[in-house]
Image (cartoon, rainbow, N blue to C red; front, side, top):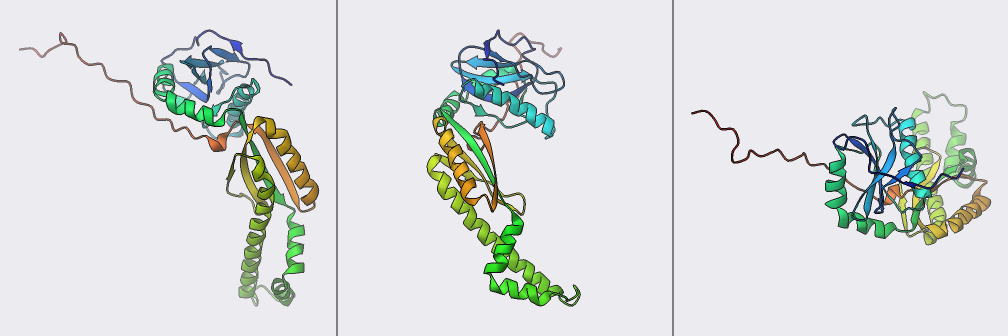
Length: 282
């Protein structure tokens, strides 16, 4: 379902001295409101707060920290998805980032770091992230190893019928040989996929694989207009390699893997006593 276009909105009515949850940065001079509700049980309004052509998408925050639960992560991502679907280039801010106040957002983030943030926006303007995870059908890969690696096959066959106690060290050796062979094949197969997809992306980031049958966990920064060509390349890979692989593609999403904004908030300056301030008694 297509989300509604963002609406012009008045400045947030929430207490500007209260904490505010941060979702992303975008360009804009007009304050906007969005349909998706904000983090936390209250579901506060999500709005953009502009300062001199730069804006932060925020909502009043009932908490200073949020647990890394699926529910919270999805609430964060739903806001980013709506902002992206409205056509904005965005700088995503990491999950559970809470500013001490709207004053801090305006002054310490949007005003003080304006040049840095504008430069980052220029670098990713018109670009989106596509994520790809590739998984082996592991039984098929193990059959390939046994068919092609004579040393592993002979050792496996030699251990047949032997008790675990009698053959413990040989079984450990077999396990190590299998692991080495799987890693070598993982590296080769991952490179086969990347060779096809790298030319379609401006940047590529490979992340750690998180399961034994995962071959590739990668993110690609792609020009928005090239996203269909990227999808087509995935379909071609699936047609060519689908007997051995399961491909899971996610996107377009905000460029999480290609933007890193570190937040550090200064404490409000303490009021200094005036010249006529209180003095000790004589």
